[in-house]
Each structure stands twice: as C-alpha cells, then as structure tokens.
Amino acid sequence: MSMHLQAATKYDPNVIIQAAADKVSKNDISGAQMVYQAALLEWVDDAREGSTSGVDPYTVREAIATLWLSYANLSRTLGLNKSAMEAYEQAINDPVAKSVGRVWLDYARFAEERDKLRTAQNVYLRALVGDGNNPAAITDEQDQALLWGEFLEMMKKSNSALTMSELKTAVQTEHIAKMAAQAEGAKTAVNQPEVVASSATLPGNEVPADEPDVSSYEPPEKRARTDDVPLVTTSAVPVQMQQMQHQQQQQQQQQQKEESKTYVITAEAVEDDTKALNSLIATMPPEYSAAWLARDGDSPPLPPSPALFTASPPKLADPTGKAILGEKLALALITMLLKKDDNDKCGSVLLDVCRGLWLMTGLKEKESAKAIENLEKEMTKELETVESRFEARLANYTGPALSSMQQVNANERDAFIQSCNQRRQQLLAMIAWDFRHLQCTQQQILSKMKVPGFQGPTVDPSALELQSRICSFLHSAFYLRSRIKEVPHLTMLKSQAERLRTSINEDTTPPTIASPPVPVPTLGAPQAPPPLPSTTGGPLPPPQYPPPPPPHAPPPPPLPVNLPPPHPIYAQPGQPFIPGYPPGIPPPPLPSGGQQPPPPPPQYGQQQFYR
Image (cartoon, rainbow, N blue to C red; front, side, top):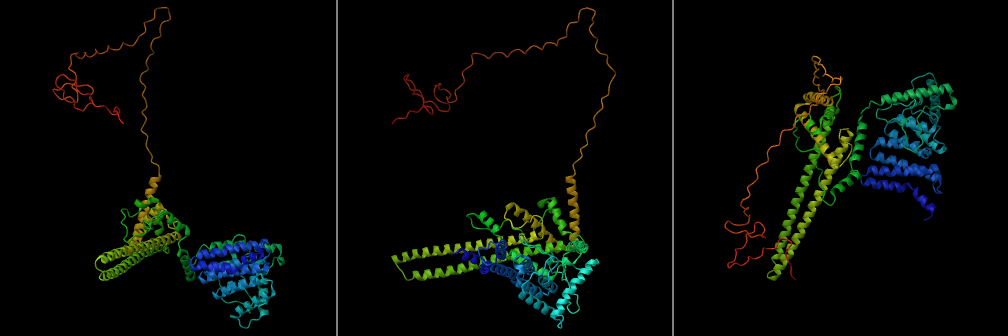
C-alpha cells in the first residue's frame, strides 16, 4: 500500500465512527468518547501543521467536520444534551472545522429543536456576521445562502411576513444600537445579541435556566479560543469606547461568576445528570477490575468483604459513632446531616441516598439467592432424570455385562456431578462480580456526594473497612430517623455534635501542670569561721585523720576432715561403688571368685564400628 493511500485511509471518518460504535455496543460510553477525542486531536494538529502526508486539505477538513458532528450526535443519541452542546461549541471553535457551514447549521438546528431559540439565533449571527474581533466564520457563498435561509425560516415562525432584506437590516441595526448602548454605559447583555427591529424580533429570547453559557466556553487544549462578544467591529469604534467596552465586559464577567454560584435545578438538568450518572456506573473502570483480579490471584472470586451495607441496621455502642470512626470523622458526618437553615435538604438527601443504596444491596442479595435456588432445583431435576435413565439402562443387562454397565453409570454420574459443580462455581463467580460492581456503584455515588472517606472506586482492604464503618453510621442514622422522625433526630444530632466539639477541644488543649512551690531557705545566725593557724612560729596542731575501720570478723571454723564420702547416685544401698559407669545406670552384680567386673559401656562418641 502506498504512503498516499495509507494517509487517505487514516483520515477516513468511517473508521473512527465504526470503532466508537463498537465501544457503544459494549456499553463503554466513555471509551467511545475517547475514540473521537483522540482522533480529533491528532487530525486537527496534522491539519494545522500541514502534515497530512499529501492528502487534500479540503478532504481533511471535511473529515474533521464529519467527526465533530458524529461526536455530537453520539451524545444526542444517548440523551446527553449538555455534552452534545459542548461538542458543538468545541466544533465551531475548532480552527479547522469552524469554516464548514454544515457544522454551524447542525448546531443551530439542534438548539432550535430543544427550544433554545436564543442560542440558535446567536449561532447564526456568529456564523454569518461575526462577533467582536472575529469576523464571520463562514465565507463560502453557498454556505452563507443556506445559513441565511435557515435563519429566516426560524424567524418566520414568530413573524411570517418577515423578508430576507428586513432580517439583514435588523441585524445591522442591532450592531449600531448595541454600540451606542455600550458607549452610554447601558447594562446590555454583551454575550447575548438580540435583534431589536420590530419586524425581526425573536420572541422567547429569555435565557432558560438550564441553558449552558456557551459564550464563555473554553475549548480543549491545542484549540483556538473565540469568545462571544457583541456584534460590532473594532475598526469602527474609537479607542476610548473600546476601553469602556472592555471594562464593561470585565464587570459583566465578574457578575456572571457571582450569579453562577447559585445553581438552579431544573427537570431537564436532573434528567441530563441522571443519564450521565447511568453512563458512568454502567461499567466498572478497568483499573478497578484489574485490582480485583490481582487480589484474587488463582482463587475464585468472592463478594467484597466487608460490605458497605448489611441487611439489619448495626448496633452502635456510642450513638455519636466516635467508637468506630473517631471523633473528627464522626463530627464531619454529623455536620453533613445537620441543617444549615430551614431550606437545607442536603442531610435528608444524603440519608435518602444511603437508604437507596441499602435497598440496592438487599435486592442484589435477594436476586442472588433466587438464582442459586433456581440452579439447585434445576440440577436436582436433571440428576433425577439421569438416575432414571441409569436404572432403565441396568434393567437390560445381567451377569458380567451388568457390572460393566454399573461402572459406566458411575463414570457418567461423576462427570455429571462435576459439571454441576462447575455450573455452581460459575454462578457464584458471576454473583461475586455483580456485588463488586454494586460496591463500585455505591462508592461512585457516595464520592459524588462528597462523603468523607470516599474518593472513587477502591479495593484497598483498609479503605473498605473505613467505608464500611461510615456506611454503618449512616445506616443507623437513616434507620433512626425513620423511627423517631426528622425533628427529634436533628435535635439529637446537634447535642452529639456539641459533645464531640467539646471533646475535640479538650483533647487539643495542652494540659497545664502546676509546679510545686519551691521552699525558700531560711538563714540562721551567722557562724564564726574556724580559727586560722598561728603564724608566730609555734608548733602546728597534728592533722586529724579519720578513725581506722573496725577489724574484720573472725574466719569461719574449718570443716571436719573425717567426713564419709558422698553416696553415688546410681549405687544401690549395700552395693559397692564401681567407677566408670555414668550416673543413672546401675552396675552389674559382682562375679564370685574374686573376678574383675565387666568394663562399663562406652559413652556417646566412643563406640567402635566394625565392618
């Protein structure tokens, strides 16, 4: 295959699309997204650097545009509308694909289908007119005509009498009006242009709460960044007006950051987050499965131990949980369950989620027990059928042939029992991996809720032990709240938190040890110094030496000399002592007639060996 043909095959979007489809068929959504992202990064870099190995730049550009649209369509098919919106925004900010008209058209149609008319209008304006320092993205006349026609059709839904000339005039009027409003310091939305002409005003231009702020979106690394700015050109604006406009942009960006701190929950956002979470927990991460395989080794897989949730609520000796968690961790969990104000529902939501995770464990255990029971019934029925066949077979044989057939039946019975054991082991292994997947899902959900001790899936034994204790405390909490209701439970948690804070403060405060008083010495009357020796030449007094030590005690009296010899250990009373025999061995009796006794037995190491 020639180099040119290899390069042409390399930039074939159908190959990438098929590879991503294979990942989707295996329920590996993140893997499919990675296939698109890796190909786009490589192809865009090649196109920007001109290293396409002789392939026509137009062909590479169209292939990149096709990949972007297929990447966005993947999220649309899965119902991930936010991800699709981000993919479209990356595509129109891509330095290669942003000049392709069908990318902008597909983005605008998608926004219009979701009733994001403000976003769709902004997409058309950025493609046809430009925004701020960026000119119109589409320069091809055919693409421009197609986009203007689609833009007019969208606007006609609110004003059927609108013409193309009126639409273009309204767009230009909007530019002039926005420039004047910015010069006067009016608080006009910078990143959201409106068509102000009466004949081209788009109804429903209010920005929905769940619409992402695509104007401040930053494309990935190695992508050129273009921000949505007012539909004006800097060549027609004086320098002072540009400075005022820049200051207003900074103020609005700061205001948008402050407003973004308050997250508005909508039904569509919840649906999108749910679908994203489902795609996340659909499969176990590869590193998580590899860690379990490393822990298993050659042994069959077993369910995770300890489990995060048990069937019955745990019995805590201390309701604060400090006996199993420690004071600081117990205080952190109790603080999460407390209300910061009357509208705070985070603690109740956390307990409801934990209750749902506990139910998931119970349902999985019930499902596993039912599967084992069904397998046992099935194998018992099959064994009865096999035994009946064996009995019918033996009825046709007698004599020596009967014993041979009995051996054949025994061999087949053993093979059947072995196959049953293999089926049972396969089911137990599948159940073990189901419980591991369930634990991975529980860890991911609790990590998303920022519960202390949970930082994603893990198989570390010490981490699992800590997480099991945390879930035991939360299990006890939601069980207790369901019994005594929310208000008494919150009152109890507040008192427990105060006790824990007091205990922690006492532990961190260093103890003060009072030093005993030092007695002040009392000085008595001054004593006269001893007299000095005279210096008149008289005799000096003799020196005073210490008295001699007392005399030593007299030595003990000597032992008597005529003591009987010690009685040997091995000699019996009335028998003489025979030297040479080791202790504990009785000597042989003396022979009569004055003969010498036999020699003693040799000691260890003195034996003589003969060949």
